[in-house]
Image 1 (cartoon, rainbow, N blue to C red):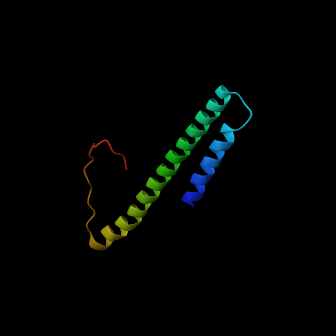
Image 2: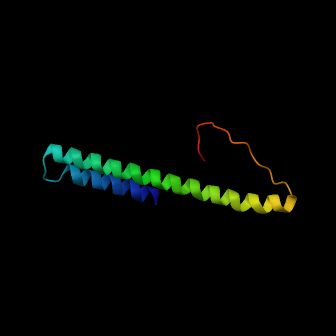
Image 3: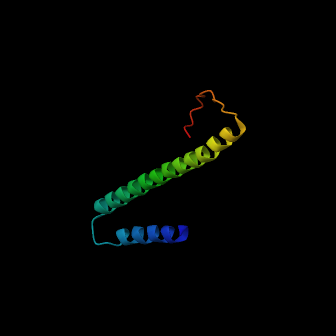
Length: 82
């Protein structure tokens, strides 16, 4: 799937480069497309993080209930928000 998406990206890039429009318009289109792809990647990353959080919670809660070890972790400010 990843190879397909990379190939699709290259194909779109080449299509834009060879389209009969001015250089300014072409660069604008490339910039817009790159921004769209970056936004999409950020969204997918956040969705993946959220899935991991839900998975950890789904495992942690029953395990804590089974062992009776409900711990509260102190909030740490490491700059990373997972």
